[in-house]
Length: 154
Image 1 (tube, one colour):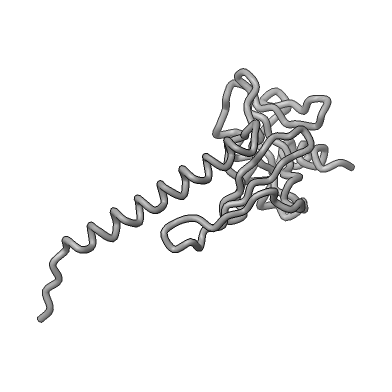
Image 2 (cartoon, helix red, strand yellow):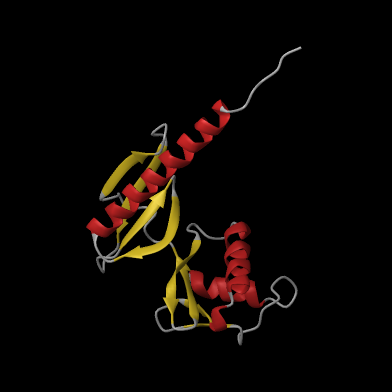
């Protein structure tokens, strides 16, 4: 039985899964499509599947088509990144860029996949650079705010 069929059985189970087939459907490619931009349903299905422990790969949001949220298993976790870089204030945050067979790029930060999908490697790299800059600015502002605090000792 394919993983998507297992997901459908898990979610449609009348005792453990509160959702019926009219809330979502599976297309010909095996992608779960959740109608009406129902983010709560998408999050609940994703959490239920990922916490079940029955699947090797995580169910993730892969995009949006019209008013449907698309969910599928993350098949890129096992492949090597095409670009990796340590980012942030202390350079301990690992940012990796992985590319699928259609040429789309995905950013993973400390092993967690970002929701954004990039059509080229250069755009994905600029996203990583912006994220690095944002992390550094946040750390700097936190450090500067701590300098303004007066500490009194008894």
